[in-house]
Amino acid sequence: MDNKIFFTTSTALKGRVKQRYSDFIVEEVLEDGSVCRVERYNKKYEERTEREPLIVPERKNEEHLILNMEKINSDTASAIALITRGINVSKKRIGYAGLKDKRAITCQRISIYMPDAGLVEKFGVRGIELRNARWSEKRVELGDLSGNQFAITIRNISENEEEIRKIIDSFTKQLEKGIPNFFGNQRFGGKRMITHKVGKLLLKGKFEEAVKLYLTDTYEEEKEDVKNARINLAKSWDYKKALKEFPPLDTRSERAMLNHLVVKPNDYSGAFQTLPKKIRYLFSHAVQSDLFNKILSERIKLLGERALDQIDGDILIEGVPTIILPGYESNYASQKAGEIEQKVLEAEGINFGDFKTGQMSELSSKGERKQMVLYLKDFKLIGIEKDEFNEGKNAAIISFTLSKGNYATTVLRELIKEEIF
Image (cartoon, rainbow, N blue to C red; front, side, top):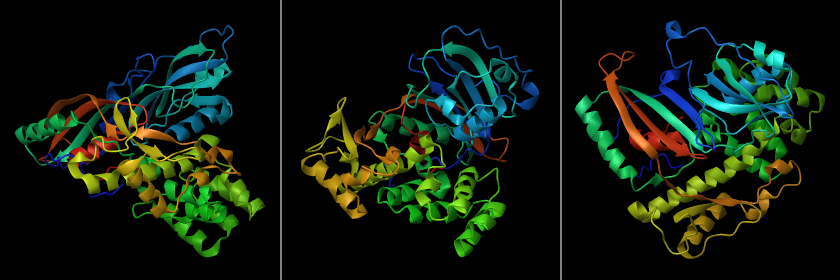
């Protein structure tokens, strides 16, 4: 998205997000309205009680073991990789409804197909806790959730308590009309911001360029050993040497690709297929998300404060204007709304047919539409306190609920008036 575009006019609440893992708590809301509660890692270490033994009930005819997974400072894919090794099952046997943030404390539901109950009960890895075991006939699939609840602490705020309350009060009133429903930067790989760029190359069939970009692109704050490994590979293209330099813990995906390329140096499509299928499909979805953000930014540039209002040609979902997430069965909106969509796709060199791929069918997408306005539920200021980690500063704790597919960072960037990663 255009990082200079902010829709709300409230004063910026300048502060720091995710200074500590406990500053960002995410609890998955299930389709029946129940919530996967964070219960352990939000407490100080000395206040945590001894773990309750996990008991797996006796199985009848069900095939999927359902568990609540609470984790700290670990993305969903990494946590699941640790579980697969700990209980000796393949990743294909584990299902989850959505990806959760890494620098956070999160709770989400997962399923495991026909695991060894004894190994599950014995599983113990620091930073991951499994609870509430029960059997089900149904696997947990992507999208099997209602949304997420967030409790977020913003630190290092210079304003006093009265000023903070005024800013958040003004922001809360503006939320009633909704805010632009941008995809968050984590959709594009966080600070590296690479997923949509790689995805575009994949959709165009440029597999070699896509692999090399994925392996070698760096960003300023990247760990030095990872950055150096990428830079060295870009100079030598010696995959065997690169395997010795890419650190195992931080570059699992890159190392999987490199292992393949050592054996088959020119099989770039095959290199990408070493990644889990659920990860591969994110590349084309990131392209769709990037185009959505660009269309929404263009709309705001052209229409200003009227950008979220219905205009000629808009296609509505539940009464809310939408923007295209392009695919091979897509059609533009008509009139002014469609002109904006078409202008952006043409400028990006993307057409609907690009989303019908021969190789790696998981990159294909029929396309859909997404509401351009984000409405929050239960936005609250929980409290304001002295920031114990930043002398002389204050911290504000806010909470809210979002429906699935929407991003807390979208809300935070409007409140703080800065990009959030």
